[in-house]
Structures are given as C-alpha cells and as structure tokens.
Length: 161
Image (tube, rainbow, N blue to C red):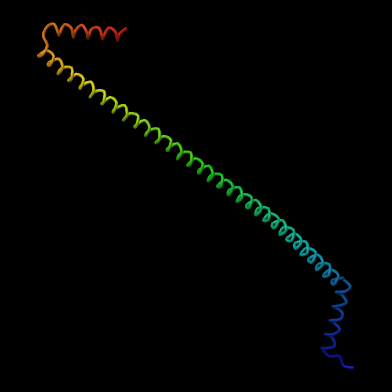
C-alpha cells in the first residue's frame, strides 16, 4: 500500500480534530456562543424594557398635554366671558353717564331759560315802571302823587307782614 500525501493529510486532519475534541474546544466554542447569545438576549430584554418605559412616558406626557390644552381652553373661555362682562358693564356705565350728562344739560338749559325769562321780565318790569313813572309824573298833580305814594307804601307794608 502506498501512502501518498493525501493520506497523510487525512491522518493529520483526524489527529488535529481528535486533539481539538480532547482539549474540549467545541465545548468552549458552544459555551462562548451560549454566553454571547445570553448577552444578546439580555440586551434585547433591556431594550424592550426601555421601549416600554418610553411608551409609558409618551402616554403620560400626551395625557398631560391634553389636560394642559383643556385647562388653557377653559382659561381662554373664562377670559372671554370676563371680557364680555366687562365690556357690557362699561357700555352700561357709559350709557348711564351719557344719560346723566344729558339730564344735567337739559336741567342747565331749563335753568338758563328760566333765568333769561326772569331777566327779561325784570327788565320789562323796570321799563314798565319807568314808563309808568314818567306817565304818572307828567299827568298827575301833587295830591295824586301823594295818594299813589301812600297806597304803594301800604301795599309794601301789607306784603312784608
């Protein structure tokens, strides 16, 4: 039997594989791969846990955002109601002020009319008295003047008492 290089290569390969099995290299490789698989599994579980936490935080923040939006809408509505109430109150106060001013102006106008009428009457009375005095003075004699004077004094005294 002739042994060629292929035979010796096969024998060397079998011896090499036997040495590897003897030194327990496949067990170490399997152990190393199992450790790596366990490490990857733990990392995946950690990533899954972190993702769930992130989703929980996102849901919480969305809930808080919705609550804040509802609060903001309520505040805006309250402010609009208050602004409408203040506007209505200001309108009413303005109308009342205008009405009071109109009433006061009308009252002042009536007073001015009454004062003007009184002044015209007083002037008319003064003019009438002066005219009557001239007429009486020109037409009356001394005895008539004395009688008129006494009559006027008596009327003044009766009105004062």
